[in-house]
Length: 267
Image 1 (cartoon, rainbow, N blue to C red):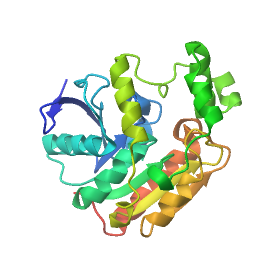
Image 2: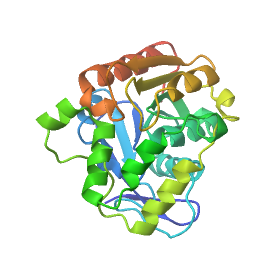
Image 3: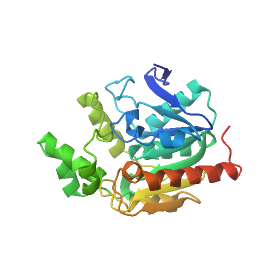
């Protein structure tokens, strides 16, 4: 299994599939690269897809020390450097969208096009989930809490038709301390002041019925990032990219193709 080495020596497991220009796929909080398993094939025909396991997840090292979304973005750079990729498109969902924001703001020359899915700027300007949602996820009955998370991710009809396994409810191999570190990293995210520095062509995508990461965050991002486009997927919850795959994947592919054909090519 291939690994990249972060600037602090942490080993980062990565995965490469498909052919074409490079496309980095960044998953949500406390999840490994399997988050993308249900939809990854949608992109492999046109792109070389690159995923990695965040520190604390999957086969990457799991140091018990503070994590940040900006630090995760630095880890992405370490993976790209290991692969010899100078520039790539980046598609981040949930916390992966927060990581992608830092990557595009701090490493503008490394990002061809940017897609931010079900994400948020965080901080004082972002819209936080309600206390009701927080309580549903914090209940001591873990089975009930997992069910609550699934219902935030998917509609009841989709859950009834798809009994699992589910790839968006966390990496089961994570130690408890790493889960806490991921939660703190996502909660501490605040990219508001950095977003105007994003120069990559940007698409913001969000489900209209997402209350896990409130849908009101989508227009905030689109307005804050110069020239960004916004697409809301009607009826979708947090895992729009999976349940509404037939809408979301073509939407992202069309956007990426348009960026490439407009001259912002990714070598």
